[in-house]
Image 1 (spheres, one colour):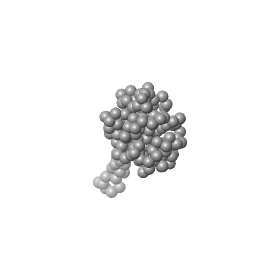
Image 2 (cartoon, one colour):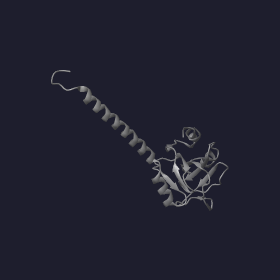
Image 3 (cartoon, one colour):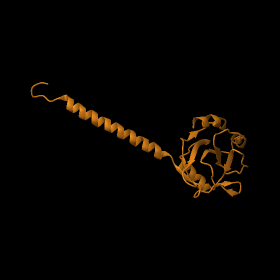
Image 4 (spheres, one colour):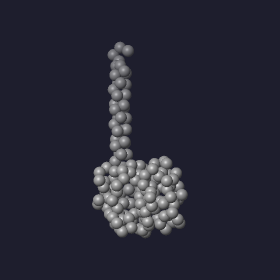
Length: 161
């Protein structure tokens, strides 16, 4: 150390400590933000219908598909999806279809449909994501929302979820 000079060690150590703490705080804030991006849906508040009955969820996880029944063969393609969880298929055009063993076809009023689309920031049809049970009728989004170019991609996108 030169006469009358200051040690660079203390300044560097303080700067490195500050930089390390800032990186940890930034990572924590980022992961909190990413977690808060996932939205909730309360099936006790928002009413969806299966044919003529009100939908009451019972499973712990569902795969949700928002789609348009105006596309060719949508009901058939969605009915044949092989997935680890039951599929909730919500038709944008609110047509009524018969449920299958693995697929529940839902419809709702226009206001509920619009609230659902806005809540989950869905900009593309068809879209797919997973929800998981938090309480009785309260479910939380458990995956990112994936857009599909065609319904033929459903099986591949389910593997990515």
